[in-house]
Amino acid sequence: MSNEEFADIREAVSALCAGFPGEYWRELDRERAYPTAFVEALTEAGFLAALIPEAYGGSGLPIAAAAAILEEIQAAGCNGGACHAQMYTMGTILRHGSEAQKQRWLPGIAAGDLRLQAFGVTEPTSGTDTLSIATTAVRDGADYVVNGQKVWTSRAEQSDLMVLLARTTAKDQVKRKGDGLSVFVVDLHEAVGNGVTIRPIRAMLNHATTEVFFDDLRVPAENLIGEQDRGFRYILDGMNAERILIASECVGDARWFIDKAAAYAGERVVFGRPIGQNQGVQFPIARAYAAMRSARLMVREAAALFDGGQACGAEANMAKLLSADASWQAADMCLQTHGGFGFAEDYDVERKFRETRLYQVAPVSTNLILAYLAEHVLGLPRSY
Ligand SMILES: Cc1cc2nc3c(=O)[nH]c(=O)nc-3n(C[C@H](O)[C@H](O)[C@H](O)COP(=O)(O)OP(=O)(O)OC[C@H]3O[C@@H](n4cnc5c(N)ncnc54)[C@H](O)[C@@H]3O)c2cc1C
Image 1: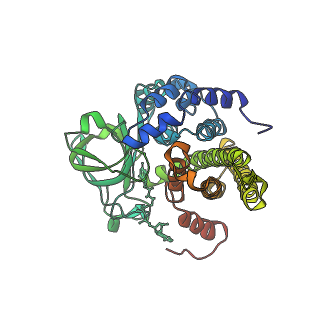
Image 2: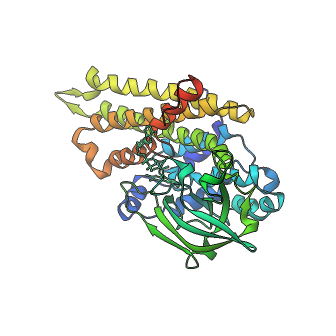
Image 3: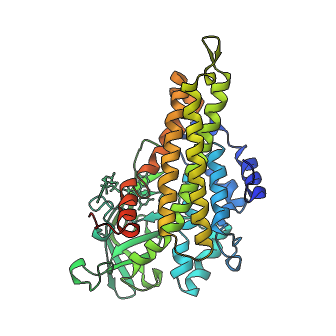
């Protein structure tokens, strides 16, 4: 596309991704295996440390640059879902951790020696209602003792560290509704076998996702981030970055589906002419392109506000909503354009179709974004 921001970064990411073609992803998908070589290549190139300030060993780039990196990964047919959290989960430590905690973890994360890709918020009984989580952390001497269960904790098996949200004060004993939850950094090497059990979940897509059980896990109090009972705010604070970056991945996915469909529609000859000559085939491709471009504008607006230190809750949510819709529209169009061949593994369409479907649900579902806009932007009564 013309007028690209961060053209050099985009070019470098595309060149790296060219070394990880469809066969690489197909094989991993079959085995539900982690793309270790791909993640190592991104780490060595410094892309995953884009948002860590230079003082801690990262490149201190704006979120717009991180968005460009993830967009190009997806547009090349790769999947940043394997490691995107390495970019933004550290934001909780960066924004709310003490200087000692930043010195302890951020340089290792920037260098790629420490993987912080696991983010334990969702639980089986509370779902989207985060304030109802049941995992508890109780202070005992120099430690907190954690009991409970998380579900859909992605990359727990591949991470060294996990950002964990747990209840430290009972729901009926807090003064303000959002109080009572706290954020901890858990050292998974120490924890597994000493109070933590991780079980992989075989899912529709290859996302290294798991359920994690906590049974009297002792977490040193020095691993508490910020103040006890204030953790929900810290998690909310990181969500705009997450939404902007995942929206950008969806834009990249949409670009991949559109390019793939346009190429196939131009080549595939049925009834003596390319199928793309039929308006019934070309119009859905054109419509998907227009949807992708408009979603991309909202991602850019949200990123510009975020980088300018301005409020961007509505824009980050709309970027996620519009981009996830654009990628899903493009995915459906691409499958349809390919006819029966869209269902064959070798074309990669069915794999990308399964992968991009996730973003209608995670990390926040479409309904919850609409509820946010209705309540916080349009002033309508809260619906839940
Ligand atoms: C592959 C994968 C990876 C994930 N990775 C992580 C991770 O690393 N860390 C983590 O913490 N979580 C992770 N998640 C969890 C994800 O964030 C949740 O699945 C998501 O937030 C929805 O929660 P839920 O599945 O419990 O759905 P529920 O909350 O049970 O909701 C089910 C449906 O009901 C709708 N709904 C619920 N309440 C309302 C309402 N008030 N109004 C209208 N509609 C409503 C939702 O939109 C949804 O469609 C992952 C999920 C998946 C599938």
